[in-house]
Length: 521
Image (cartoon, rainbow, N blue to C red; front, side, top):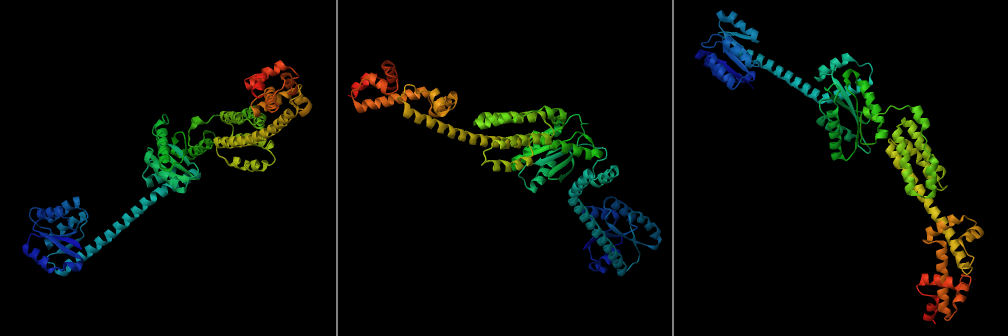
């Protein structure tokens, strides 16, 4: 129901219209009456009606004055003017305030009802239009982020977009784009992540970064255009804000974010700035996951010069692997990858060096391990950073080195077992020596045999032989009882040299052979 205020200085007319008109037929209700324009305006300010039926000629503030004052503050209120024949031309002045309904006195109930019905219909139509416009605005505001995101994608990928498109869209978005100095920020969530993580990162960036003009997701990465009024002289604020974004995202999702930020330029050069960040992001191969990459991180390199001078010497690594020395092999891998990181060659060239290194290890792989090592080469080709490649090569080198270590220990143990058997069979021979065993029995290098013997048994060959001879002599004394020292020296490999035998015996048992014999006679 529309509220109606009735204004007339003649009580009879005021009371008559109030009682005669069937207000509900027109979808209205009589909300109040007033005897003059001043009283009417006071009621309007207190509780604005939808429609005012007012006489023209009134004391204090006439109908035209009431219309003018009301239109200034409440332009949505509609008027029906009542006037005598002589005042009709005067009443037309109200047209400048949008008044379109006039009734000549005396007027009957049907005329008033017709005017009210017409105004009610107009107000209904106006409300529908206003509601439609509001819905359209709300729908547009909901769609605006998607429109902005799509425009950004189109602008950086479609070469036909230019300054005219910027002019159109800056009006549509209510932004200054045409001559705006900006930076492009590209952010990548490191694996493993879900699609919703990209939108979360986009929202966090919009909250924490200063003056984000546009943002979207493209090729699994978040792309933002940030206003930069510093003239490109100071990027510290932008860099600091990016660190805050990465830290906040990691706090919530425990995922690393790699970011690349371009230099400053005009919005019209957005495609060039985007390509710049793509180039920076590819440098993530060297900087690693979770880094912030800027122009300073890129190093101009003469690829030909560095490519031909770099010698990784994979043979040295292979020798260390075959020796079974895991620590030295690991240090060598770190040294080689340190060289690659220092030179920062073209990524394809660096990958080829790594694959060359891995292939060298495959060549020295035991036959039963070669299939597994070869299948993992495909994984190396898919790795995205030098750090990942280094970790993979380290693990492969360590695994291969451990296999060689076990194999070497097995072979060494077998050799030492042969030496122990020789000692057991020949300990009574005073000519038994390491050089004799190496040259005449096992046909191996004496120094090498001495090293592996000590590595396995924990003591030198000569010490082991003397201790074994003393053990056998002590056992003979316990079983035989009374025996001569010179006889023992002759029986147990000391060539009858009783004095030397006594010295060695006391060294290992703590007593002389004579005392040992007395204690067991």
